[in-house]
Image (cartoon, rainbow, N blue to C red; front, side):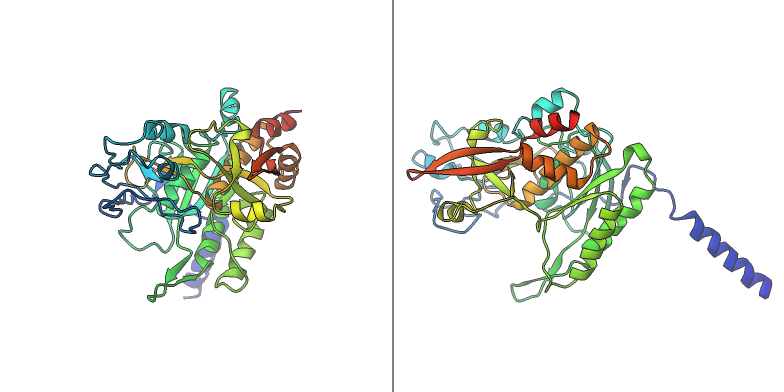
Length: 393
């Protein structure tokens, strides 16, 4: 009996010393079905945009059948529309509302990122981990870059959701992403539950588990293909469940050498009119959700400004489909910075998060914008080309 017990103890010690089972990449644990928005948005008359409304989705035309409407007089309203590949447009639309051009222009990450791609600075060999909602894993924007897809506490059969494909494509998308050749490691989880009374209760314990899983995965990757950044498009507060767990997990990831991007950090998103050039700094303005506050009290010191509004991303409705979000959130700015960090790590492998933030703020551009006769300074706006040039020196 003693010999058997000793043998079992020795086996347990041996297995513990060996560490976790090696991961075989690509590792795709599930293929969530695309979601359908058919019948979700219906309009009996032309939709109207109210600049005084706080409703982000007041011009939500995703998958809407608008073929029965006359939109010929809706030009100003349509410039604030969110729509996707499944939106059915009528014949009567304003000549200056070119939805095809808007969709295509929105794919450009902007700010000169395309110039970096032309130089071969694409994030190749750098790992980006994203923790977010269930993903359309086959989407053409990131399917070939996706090295791992796992889920933590996701109900069986859950469809893909809008957030995941958007943030994944902004970070590593082949045509819309900042770092199109970076490796993508994706863990889907939930940040809380609905309470059954119309409310939502946050719980970040699952996110903390996901962060620690990323750390574990990273230990199995070769030195020249490590995960360098984790993108989490949400923030947490002290009074929320799981706060201590997520703070500790983030600290562990940072000690392991990773930049962890989340919504509590000093960045905010900017936007532009849908047909304006994404590469021209002068095209940008405060993001729609915070513009009024900016013009009333333009004190946004030490915030890095990153493209957010008027972005085209992968859609959760299908592997070849896209969606144009006229109004974004900081959720869209976070994976943009994650992609930017991948480019920086490709150019300077020994870069640290502290160095990255310092140079990003120092090299950012400040522009003048005129609003209702008043001139305002907007900046620093992330300047990817200047940042990379500084690192190359």
